[in-house]
Length: 408
Image: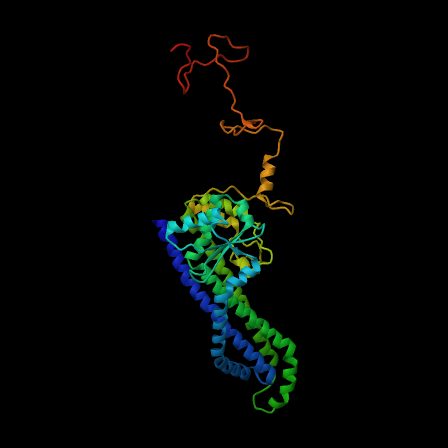
C-alpha cells in the first residue's frame, strides 16, 4: 500500500507540474510576439530604446488575441492530424489480432487486468529496438513497436515494454508530451520567422523608414540595443521551451518504469528489456520530437540538461533499489554487422561447437546424441565387489532413494 500511495502521489504531483510547465510554454508565445514587435519597431523607427520598448509593448497587447487564436489553431490541427504525421515519418502500420496475435494478446491481457481500454497497436518495419505511445484521447491512443523489438525480446520483456507505454497513457504523459511538442513547434516557427525577417528584409525596411521617422521627437540610437534585446528574448524562449520539454520527458520515464513493474509484477523483465534496447533504439527518419516519445532515446545532447531521457543505468538503478530487480549489466554495444533477425541469432546458437551440448535433465544443461536426447546412464552398483585402486568403495549411505539392496 505504501508503494502504491507513493507512486500515485508522484503521478498527481507530476501532472500538476506538467500543467504549470505547459502554461509556461504557452506564455513563451507572447514573449516571441513581443520580441517580433520590438524588432519591427526598431526596423521601422530610429528612436531611443525606451520608446521602442513602449511601442513594442503596445503592439504585443494588440497582437496577443491573434497570437492566441493562431496558437490554438496550430494545436487543433496537430490534435487532429498528429498521429498521421507521426505514422508518415516512422512508417507505422496498424495491426490486428490476426496479424500479431502474440503482441495483441499480451497488450489485451494487461488492459483487462486494469480495466482500461485497449489502445491501437502499430508496428513499424525497423531493426531498431524501440516503442512509443501517442494520442490525445481514448479514441486516438496507440502504441507503436518496431519489428526488431518483437524479434529480439521475449514475451515477459515485451509485456514490460507495453506496460511502460500503457503507464504513459494512463498517467496522461502522452497527451502532455504531444501538447508540449506542439507548443515547442510554435516557438520554433516564430523563432525562424523572426530571424528570416531580421536578416532577409531588415536592411530594406530600416533604410526606407528612417526619413519618415527621424523628424519625430522620440530620440535616436536605440536600434542595435533593441535588436540585441529581441535576439536575447528569442534565444531565451527557445532554450526554455527545449529545457521544459525535455524535463517533462525525463521525469516521466522513471514513473513509467515503475508503472510497468506495478502492472507486470516483474521488475527483472523491465530491466532486461532496457538493457537489450540500450543504444539500439535509433529510429531512421524520425525527428527529435518523435524520439523524445520513445522508450529510449539514444540521441545525446552536449550537456545533461539536454538529455531527453535519463540514462539506462540510472533507470535500472532505480528499479533495483525500489522494485527489488536484478541488473545483469550492460550488454555489448551493437556492431555495424550485428544481425537483428532472430533466426540469425538462432542459427548462431544452433551452430556446432567443440564442446558437447549440456543435458537438460542434468544440472549442467542439455546434451544430445544425434537427433535424440541423451540421458547419461548411471554407473552400475556392484555390491561386494572391491573397488579399483584409487577409487573409493561404494558408499553405504542409503541416499535419497533408500538403501541399495539385492533382496526385498
